[in-house]
Amino acid sequence: MSLPLADWFERLGSVDPAPFFVLSLLPYLAFLWWAQKVRAFPRLALRGFQLTLLFVAVTIAAAVVAQLAYGKQLADVDPLHGGAEAFLTLSNLVVLLGFLPQQAEKQEPPDGPR
Image (tube, helix red, strand yellow):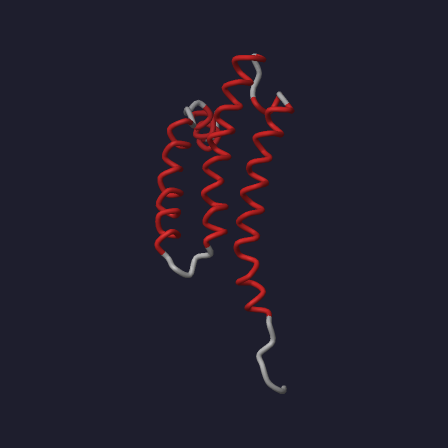
């Protein structure tokens, strides 16, 4: 006798994740649109979030090259995988640098005696 949950996971494992990946871009693009409209949103952080889309594009291209040139998944071709991940590191760094000034403002002590 099979457990209903195990059956559900088995069926879920056979679902193609590609449409979900494409659909996940829609809320991210909506976030970028919103962040661009908000004046208080740090511009450098916005650039970092936009660079994340570049990471996605580079990762897709690297995955295609890995499959066509080596017959392997991207995760199995270290130079391509590392190069793609470098774009994620870059975008994360730009986001961090974009939010750092706001964090420093919050931590400054108020003027005047205590």
